[in-house]
Image 1: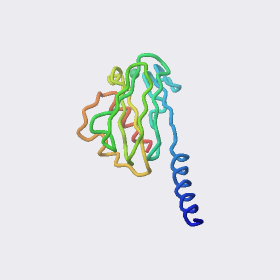
Image 2: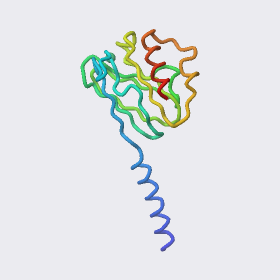
Image 3: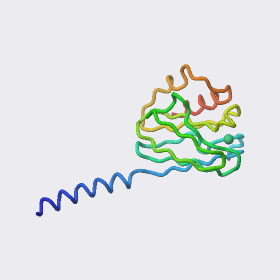
Image 4: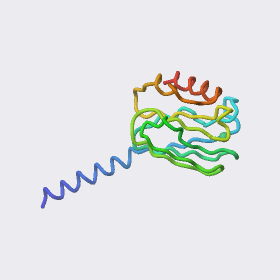
Length: 144
Ligand SMILES: [Cu+2]
């Protein structure tokens, strides 16, 4: 009986540990960022761990967040509606590309970086993104 209780206790603790260590990360969608750049996710470089949930908030109007095809480390996808918040749980290490579709041409993109080591060269390889989005992606990748 004592062994059983200990086993249950250990299982319970590991479940709680998982719950405790999964972070909720909030990202604002803005017309103008605190650094003066227009049409931004803030932060645009989101550092996360596997199991974390990233929530994109419609802080200012006219924005949405969606996954970018072929740029999701865990192969998943999501698409929020304009002026609505949307959440995504990252389930694998690597890089994730996020865009605001209406402002893709303005370079409104973000990267979720999960883990510590990244293949930054492969992230943009063969991908079709707007000129401004590419420049912002390159800037974000250089910070990793
Ligand atoms: Cu936008």
